[in-house]
Amino acid sequence: MGDAVRESCVPRSEVFLTTKILSAGGSPEKTYEKCVDSVRKIDGGDGEGREGYVDLFLIHSPNCGSAARREMWLALERLVEEKKVRNIGVSNFGIGQIEEMRGYARIWPPQVNQIELHPFTQQREIVSYCHTHNIIVQAYAPLVRNLKANHETLVSISKAHSVTTGHILIRYCLQKGWVPLPKSDTPERIVANKEVYGFELSEEEMGQLDALDQGERGAVVQVAKND
Image (cartoon, rainbow, N blue to C red; front, side):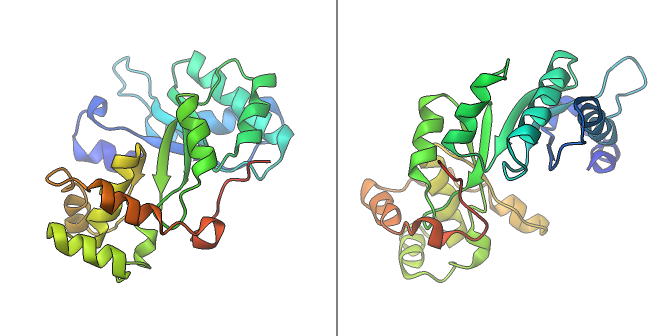
């Protein structure tokens, strides 16, 4: 990712770079160094006095356990203090895991919680909690990995607006107050995915999509555990 940004000649200030840490290093210092190394690989600075940084650094998963989560978060806070990271957050965290952070975090709440979200898995409890605490909700897998492209409700609504079912799914996220993260390796589709501001879903259409929620059964990756 770092090489791609450098070779693009796009000013660093115009690119928002996100990275994640999957597991702790075994000690606070090793975890910190692991994070610093990630920043260096992505943005080593410009050699003219500008220090490298990433815009958002996330803990990838809460599944590593309480002690490891604490170790990783304290490392991320240190990176913020050193201006190597501008924003820090979490991914797939439930309410209990975010609340637990109050006991050790200097930066709380996390600025972002990245979770799986789409009409078939809406995770309403954690979403409501995040909105209440001003935590930005990023929606990964908003296109449901194209597994629902032919779903009757999506097709019907997409025809009404003369757009694709993918556009409907992205627009749904935006109107729910989520930040959608559609994934594609095809340049044409990446460009097409942003064409979602020329129409708006009606209250009735939003209701039809809301009614598709299947909870954990509808997930293609995982849901947050709110214990």
